[in-house]
Image (cartoon, rainbow, N blue to C red; front, side, top):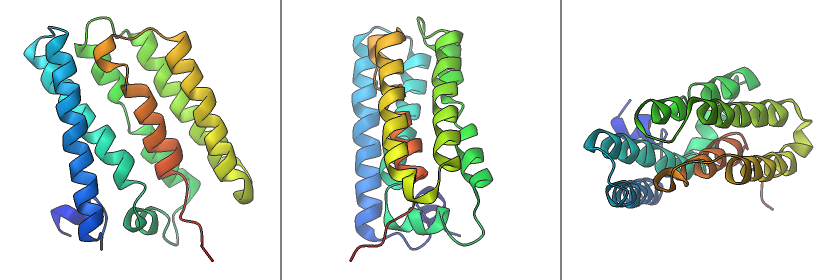
Length: 176
């Protein structure tokens, strides 16, 4: 398996790779600039940039046809999808290094993402897409209106929810 197969998905097209890496780099660059502007330590800046690369790139990667085919191939279950969501512990990584990004905030963001994923994966298949959008909309309300996070990482929770609940959990739908 090549590096591209691991980072994007097997059989990703040149366009999918280009879009994914371009958005990952642009997101990391903007997050880097926001963190530098906030006078955060170089450790914080580096961690924020790496997390941004993963979040922004992952939001695009998970929406590609190649990733949809890979993550929703035969034999993949809700347990696999919930496991993918559960391993996204970046809220706790941010809480460990970013001043003002508290552990309660990290736990809330993590719980919102995981709860949304449970709601989506347990919904009847024909309703998963609208329920995923509803769970994301509700989650966005919580993470942007109830929680207080430093301005330099205000993008994090919304992008995480898009990456996981909308891009990853939803299979490709047949067009016709």
